[in-house]
Length: 168
Image (cartoon, one colour):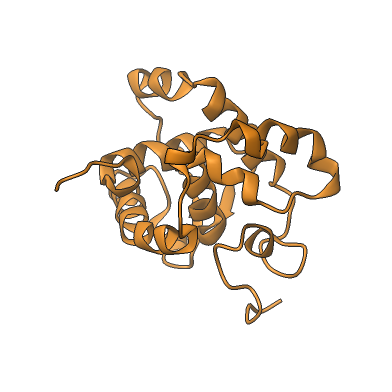
């Protein structure tokens, strides 16, 4: 049986990555952080599993367990996250080939937007957000100042990536 899902669509991945890069506050982001953000943009229901920091407790209420559609629940979110990696990397390499992100920084696992402008038609599409997508982007941007590694970091709080052996 053939089933489509945006998580495994390179073109959808290009759109999501560009959307995230366009909305973030900083001018560059770690590859793993962007991959985690992309996962939650693709699967917003999974955000309820994140261990939220105290200062984001109000936002956590938006992602209550009782608002979840059981048919959208992932059985193994870590495995899906791993399966998304080649699609995410291909999407980022595509953005680098278009000159929208810095290719040298990408090779260092840093994603940095270039000065190349995004076409207006695409910018309009990226601004069309559902309430669910808008909420998940607020959450993602709320995690901007959270470290990526360590016991208080994004990797630990999401459980999607191993953090114990990261260089600090």
